[in-house]
Image 1 (cartoon, protein in one colour):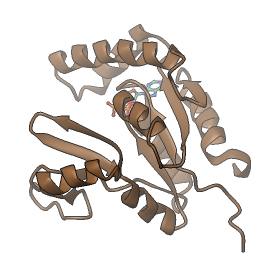
Image 2: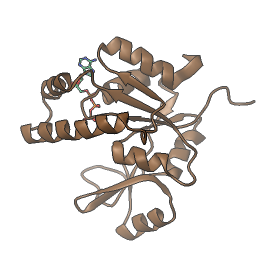
Image 3: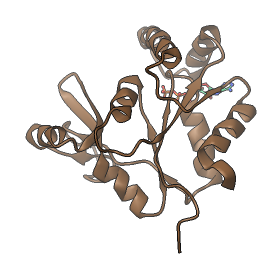
Image 4: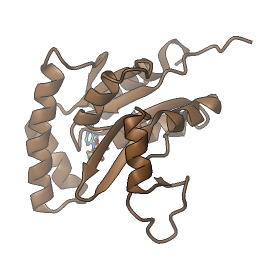
Length: 196
Ligand SMILES: Nc1ncnc2c1ncn2[C@@H]1O[C@H](COP(=O)(O)OP(=O)(O)OP(=O)(O)O)[C@@H](O)[C@H]1O
């Protein structure tokens, strides 16, 4: 039987604090069998009870670089001495289960995915805060970050917002997360489409 819905991956991006996790949590709760997150690769060592293939695919730097060379990552980045990446194979794992893969990634990753030479273009959703003032209030209200982190996130948010307005941005849809219910319904309509 032909699949009744598109399994094309969905990329959700937007500044830290825009509400991506909040909206995705609701979506996964409403559609428990429909979506999945891919398991990323990392060169960092497992922590505590972390298991290979569950939290991450734990690989050596050589294995990681090999996959980079083969264009096996749709996006990858290095933070400090550790590299992280989303592989095409990991996305396909989700698709094999008949689920749509959701990628929650930051701006540089979005650019890489959009410019990947072989990966089929996913659909891009950008979640925007209503204003920088409100974003700042939400980041402070979340109370998970230190002051220095909040300032870093706000600075990066300006860069992300500028990018979203630029012609280079690949976004197919921008949802402004002012009223959460409204933003959720708009994001859902884009992600789930006509089957909503
Ligand atoms: N529409 C909204 N109105 C008020 N508060 C909101 C709204 N949407 C999200 N929030 C709150 O804003 C904070 C940031 O949201 P969330 O953690 O989902 O952002 P995020 O985009 O996933 O951030 P990060 O990229 O850092 O993970 C949370 O405390 C959340 O409860």
